[in-house]
Length: 486
Image (cartoon, rainbow, N blue to C red):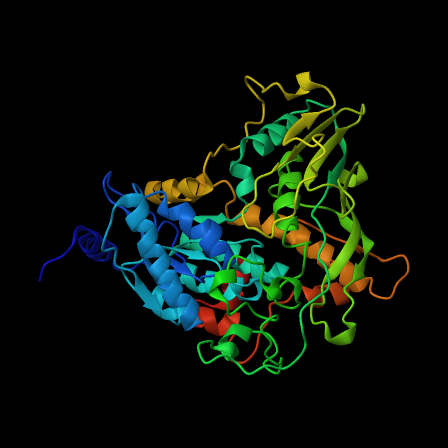
């Protein structure tokens, strides 16, 4: 029997360490040879995969190759395989690039040729697929938010640490120069102590249709619902468009609980992540969140049901820092110091997808601004040097090839902390339903607990029948309770 170098290394490792078991520290650390590529599989082919994640890894043709694709919509799966092949032909001159197609993500994860996976699926599926991938020994690039609930995210972060695997969350703003510069200046005291951070995340609008439609034959709708309510009637605006010419448009589920929570976890996962970075809170979080929101109008057969406007105040540093997250602010992050000086960063005119919000065209808003231009001068030797990355996907692949999970810009623990802050905002809004003054939710970041029993219930993982985390982990030889305890 002939063995490839990749299979030989795996066989040799098993022979040398016969007593290794899941969760053994260091079991998945391996470095790649200079000319050896990382084999990537992609789970989910929709708006973010076609516009961001697949192009992002395909352009790293010197480091990896996309060898497999999975989607539970057969029409999208076929379109995705065609897209990958055409992209490799155009960018790498590969005329016959082989891509395996899978309908069930378990089958892709069982493929021994796949080293790492991009997870580009609706939020309510993040924890199930991410935990399965990590349990199977695959490195992951996980779209934001990290998970749909705080407990789900903690489970995924703990499993990543136990497996010593590389995780990158899709908060790619950390790999953009203006965000890095502003955060490094802020955390090093360029404008003094930070007393306020103004965060703008945009605003969703009501829509969708509650009319019952027949389920397309090409879609496994029962599986798409996953851990949520199986009785939810099908409508295209609940799921995603069946028109492949509109695949780059915003899907309906992103504005539909419980599949997504709306802007607080959508754009909030980007913007609040940067706020935490600039405050030096990558391993911590707020002490409380208070505020109000308005909910979408679902009258007249409209389906989408997440929040529209929102006004949330997060308390950090013993109440000395107020992070104000409000739809009235422009799409950016502004750090304000105790002397009134400020630093500001935003994407500018950059759009990842056609549905991204427009930036005001008045010429006043720039990607990098400050109360005085001199404040923007980079620090030569910062006391706190933030991690640098010029390309989020390359950063992920470099970490995989080096066998070093700590290299990624938004590793599992950072991702969990940032997404937790977003989830706390969503929970606060939910607890404030029908209350004129909204609600206040206290939070212990160290223990990841709140004293509010109702809020604790909102932290639990989603589960329905076979779609549950304990069974998913048991499939690969892990115990849910042990992983959750870390």
